[in-house]
Length: 513
Image 1 (spheres, rainbow, N blue to C red):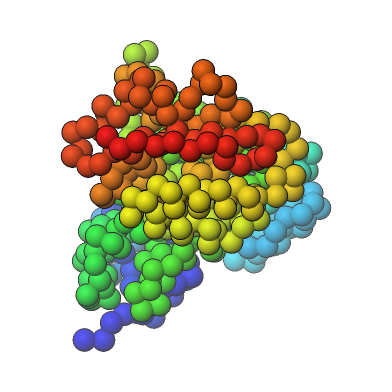
Image 2: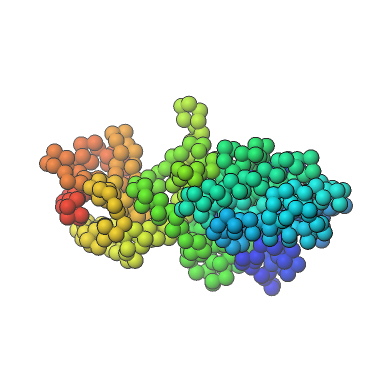
């Protein structure tokens, strides 16, 4: 049996359908969306299929029925009615100035005038051209207009490290997007996608009637591939693959529907003869996140057990960037579970989605912050697997001896336990190990817990400690090991002392329980 082609990088729905590419049917979800809403916003990380879904909507509204043969929506939609569609996309190119933004709007609205056979009185770079285009399209086609906006926030994200320019571009976008609300009587539907989530006090201040479906359970699978998709649609492409390993590497994104795979990973994994690699991570470099980690002297073990409230639902503030929210929105963290606290506030526990992101992100941090190629992490893994604590100590000593602190730190962070815990955390995470930072017990918080298949390691750190603050003794006094006694594995208690002057280990004690 001849297999269909893989649509790697293809975001055009008609090309996928006409040229016999694999297509995971999202049209049932699209139909439900169109039946229930008029103004919709969707946030998803990059390369998750937002652009393809948007183009699918365009073809539905333009009544291209032949493309939907055999799909869920085929017999549910009225194909006798065609709507004029205005397409706005910032996916291509990079906006480097406010003039670039105006030039981009000019390009967008000239293109739409040509598509719809309409000539605007106002210049294409003028927001009034957008408004005029909507009204004239409504009059010409005698149907309400559809507006589809792809990567609405990319001009801001392109300049997020330049706060004044990002603010100027944000204000320019607000000016244009406000046209959508002002054109309500002429519109059938508007759909906006991006990476960051909106807040009604910033970029979407004029669109207070828009519905954010990013974490609505019925639309949790709107982009990406579910486990069922992988095991059915892609079954012929994955013969002989260890599905548990595939799931560990690439599954895990949670938008309150099924756990999802990023399509870019699955398609490339198949195309590269089932080779495990960091396909999605390598498609975009998170340099901005590294700058934030440096600037905030961020305590990296927090990322192993992070709890946030509903601020997750809001866009980050350009003037006060929130690292945790950006990590979530950009796909480096995802939702582990959802609970309600004693005040009935919704609390999200954020986790790293899968092995690809865990290993790749932490290797990138090691390379960027500590100027190391991360090969020094390998002896750590070997020592832990072999339960060789002397080798573990030597590996840690080697790591700290190699870090050029002054190249990246301009404060006294190296005087605090958090710095040393962060270094150890990222090296262990880069190996894909199961790490718990600030591990909660009924007696307090363990600095770091490492859960291996054959052993558990409980680590406590002290910097410039006195005799009264012994790290190993604290683990014993607070009985941290009791939390794991039912695991029926060896438990190692490790107290590590650091000297801020020497910037390395000054003491290493351990006991086995």
